Image 1: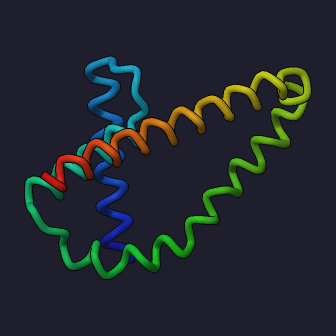
Image 2: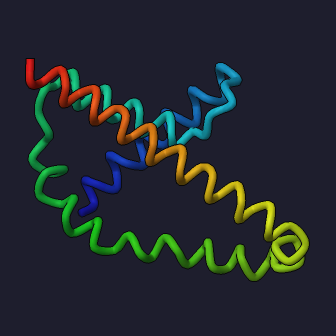
Amino acid sequence: MLDLLLWLLAYQLAGEALARTLGWPLPGPVLGMLLLFATLWLRRAVPATLKSETPRFLGHMSLLFIPAGGALLAYAPLLRSRGGQLLLILLASTLLTLLVTAGMLKLLLRGRHR
């Protein structure tokens, strides 16, 4: 699992460096994941360590919710005052994501049937 963590941390660091160097308004981890995707796409294969360790790693992803729970406690006053607005934004963004995903799936499946 150490190899997998090193892959992810290296790409996160590269994404963070790229975002800060170029001044892009994207988070470094997002750019890092895009770089990882590009690397895997160009290789046309997933390395054995990523293929074997990813399922075990995903089993522990729930640990990433601990900092989010702490943030909920830290920002409780803000959530109380702006909770309705945040809820509306979350619902709208979720709906938009579902619609875009469904549209892309429909577009890709239509091209596949031809």
